[in-house]
Image (cartoon, rainbow, N blue to C red; front, side):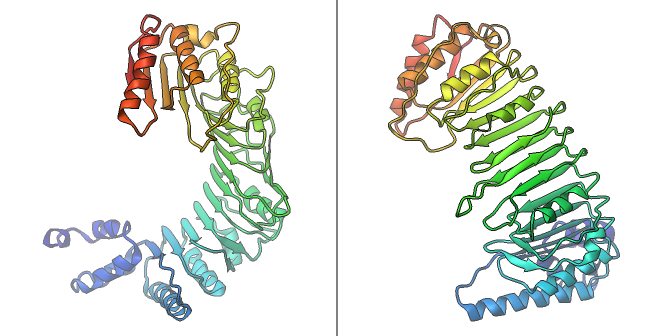
Length: 420
């Protein structure tokens, strides 16, 4: 503690800015020198993750949190607020949150986060927030927005995360997103009763987009995502029940993650420039005819559907420059699967000329899996690394699966086969 005390105030304040506010305030009891330091820390992070079953105790807890936040803001003296985070398991008063956010905006806040853990709660965000010129990062989670004004502007916002947010209507989401002229990173997660049928993302500046749609309304009213952002470099789609429309090609796309149970193979038509791709699609999905992934060098394919071998062949045939292939099993599958392997008539160009790395996670050693592995190991003429990760609770069985494959391909492989 003596060494810490010898540090200059500016450095101590910098260190304290990485500590939750409750801990920062507690340092005021250390000595007279520490007493005013916490009031100058440009970061306020309030965390409350307790969830009391007793309503009376929970009410006291909420009141205590509200009093702590209000008291802290009253005594806080930093003229510029780098960060204001509220992570709560309990409901806070909508008008109190509005007041806290107003104070943060008045202090030129750059990073604002309002997050609830277990249930949705209403917040009344002040109108001046929607004209905040200093805000660079905004995250809302499990929030019910009381309204989004018709006129708003976030001229400095580069990161926006809307996680399980409930809006007034489609237009509320569109207004919120479209008025961020330099937005680079957007994350959207749907929820039950979010009141949005069509999520439209039309942002020329956007470089990274992540969409998670894993809930279904009752009666079914699936979400539609319309994406028109040709500067995208990263795209992450997890969509089990909705519909997705990509408008135009994505010439700058570097990495894409596509998990869908809604036949979204048409999306691959916009991926002709992608370099790294993870794919997990519905069993009825068909590879889009005529689509060539000219720039793809790394492919990761999930084998959770019965027709995964057909998708594998299509991807290999239409990825002429592929250098790395990884097969994985990331989802539960039926014990009695009907997987078949149809060897392609012509060996894909990528196997003969480019593939250097081959990995297979959760390899179970079935007849089909063995046939696929042998085909790849036999025809990948420039293979440098091949690793199999057998899946079994029995160590003996793991070694047996690996040994069977190792012996079957010993005279065919271009490199050594290793067990991971």
